[in-house]
Image 1 (cartoon, rainbow, N blue to C red):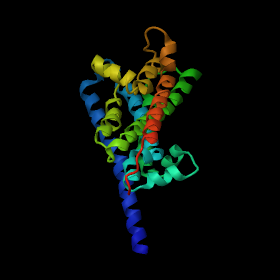
Image 2: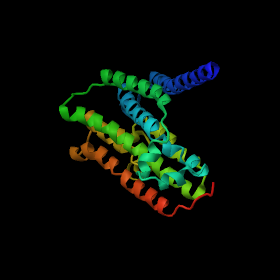
Image 3: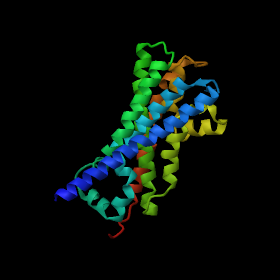
Image 4: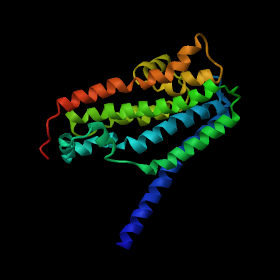
Length: 250
C-alpha cells in the first residue's frame, strides 16, 4: 500500500512539473524571439506577455474543471454516459464532475506569473473599466475554451473515439492566440474572431487596455461578452447530440 501511494505521489509530482515547464519553454522561446527582433508588427515584448498570460491562464483553468468533456469519448466507450443519462441530475454537471485535472495548476501558476510580469512592464494607464475588463477577458477565455471542449465532445456521439481534430482548435488555438491576432493574415484574424472567437479574449479588449483602438471603443470593451455567447450554440449542438445518442452497448 505504501509503495502504491509513493509511486502515485511521484507520478503526480512528475506530471505537475512537466506541465509547469511546458509553458516555461514556450515563454523562453518568446523571450529570445524578442531579444532578436525587439517587436513584432509594432507589438512590444511586454504587450505580448499580456496576451500569453491571459490565454494560458484561461486554458489552464478550463483544463482543470472541464476535463470531463475533453475525455468524453472514454465515458461513451466504457458505457458510463448511459448511466449519466439515467441519473436525476444535470448531464453537463455530471460530465464536469467526472474528472478534474489539478495537475494543470502548475501551468496556471506560471501563466499568472507571466501576466503579472507583463503588467509590470507594459505602459498602461489604468482605469476601473480596464481593470474590470482584464478580469472579464480571463472569464471569457475560460468560457470559450470550455465551449470548444463541449463542441469537440459532441463529435464523439458519432465517432465514438475522440478526434485529433479537436486539438487543432484547443491546443492550436491556444498556441496561435498567445500572440496578438493582428500579426497574422486577415483570414486567420477573421476565423478566430467569428468562428472560434479567441480574439475576443486577448486581442480586441487588449487593444482597448493598451489605448490602441481605432473607432468605437464600445465594441472593444464588449468583445469578451460576445465571446462568452459562443457557449450558447455549443451547448445547443451538444444537446442535439444527446437527443440522438444511441448506446454503444458497452
